[in-house]
Length: 280
Image (tube, rainbow, N blue to C red; front, side, top):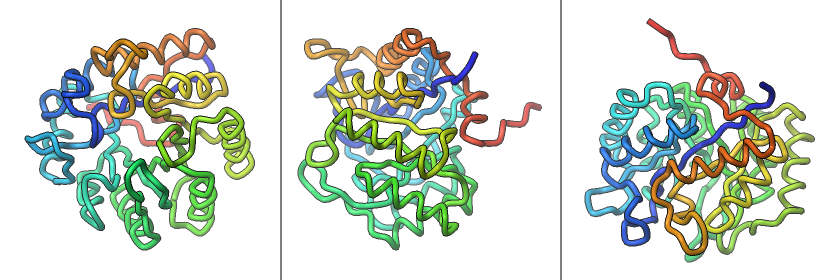
């Protein structure tokens, strides 16, 4: 088995509501159950947000602690990645959960446009979040909404603000940000190889109808993928996804098409340079 493909499932996000798709998990219990099913389907990383009881986004560390406790109990092998995104909080509030020491956390290193607003990631906040992740042993995943974000990740690695070689995720298809463009995607891959080495792991996420498209491009090109109801609530144009696990299953089918094994949590940790859990 060579070049296993990591599948990350983004189970909830900040925006999708049950009115968009009843399968969107909102409560802690729903998120744990959805993650367990997605893990059994092939996901080795869960990208997690938390919500208030009314479904609005939250950055409450206590909610993250409850979610982490549930995930560790019911899905002990899966790698847990917390979101430090800007829709659920502002300033240092965005990183208040890092002290819980999840395996990973998302890190946006620059600003860009979103559909109705500017996604602000000022340099001082980026540096603080990176420092908090380093202090608590949390592996960043760089969310690159623009080419400049890949270049910034390289600069931060070179000057020591990022301790480890960056694991970069290309996010494509966000309205008013980088579209899902095959030539741009190919250039991103070449840029990763040039800056970080041909063996540097990277992944890609497509938003909405572009999810399966980006899954296909990334798996075929040797990268890793993100799927899940945060980014896309449909199996196809006419069918709502019945679960996060169903979207993971589509990514697994692509892995089979391109003859790439699905990475286990153990292999995922090895690929990303993370410590293996201690077995009692």
